[in-house]
Length: 107
Image (cartoon, rainbow, N blue to C red; front, top):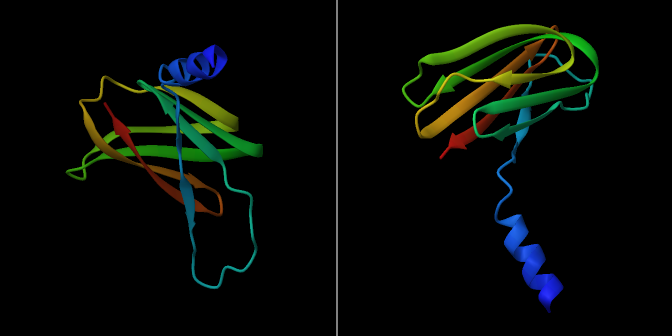
């Protein structure tokens, strides 16, 4: 019982939150690709691809203003975002052939 209580208590301290991404289909696109993964931990955004690629990242606030943009050439990136105010944000990741969207919240 003590072990179960400890596990529940420790899980409450975890701040890293997965960002669910979905691929935006382009006209006449048929091939399936493995989605990248993304997570947010405070102001640190982590993005990982299965293989190395060139990609651009944009973070947009609820009003539609772009609060961050950057280009990367690797299997992923660990990005320290500027001090974002509490609120909801949209994540857009675009590689050469695909566009991925997700949403996250800063508390």
